[in-house]
Image 1 (cartoon, helix red, strand yellow):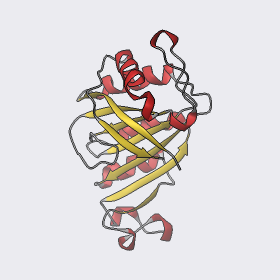
Image 2 (cartoon, one colour):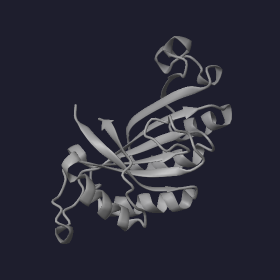
Image 3 (cartoon, helix red, strand yellow):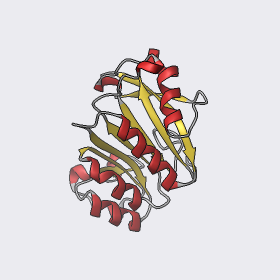
Image 4 (cartoon, rainbow, N blue to C red):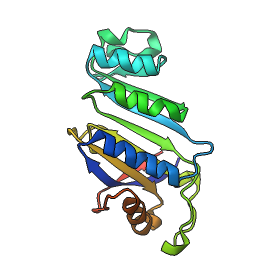
Length: 187
């Protein structure tokens, strides 16, 4: 197991603006073998139905704890709301439909990238898959849906020693700025 540092580079209440920023960053990264992971707290049956339409085999458990319901034992998630959802290693084309399904519920969508590229003019070498991630938090400012909000935050993950220069460069690419807000992200 390794850790990366996740730095917030853009926070906005405009979902379309945040998605454009994600697209820009995905256009910079090497995504040739990338995949996407999902974490969410689903509180309503409407959101649950939309999310299950996008990802029918969601892994989940009741927010209270697994003893109050989970996908492991075949419980009906609609009877266990609110639930925590975890889904891993999906194709990139599942991300936007999942985000659209969420409505007001909080989530984190993480793209596991192949690499951040070298940027010689900024003095940056390429960064391997081990530290190349992008997380978009919807209706939450943190990676774990603990700081709920009505806005959305784009986080870039980098090596600790690479933090300031690469994060600032990536933030500049999306019209954001790095204000020093970082989280440790165990992966």
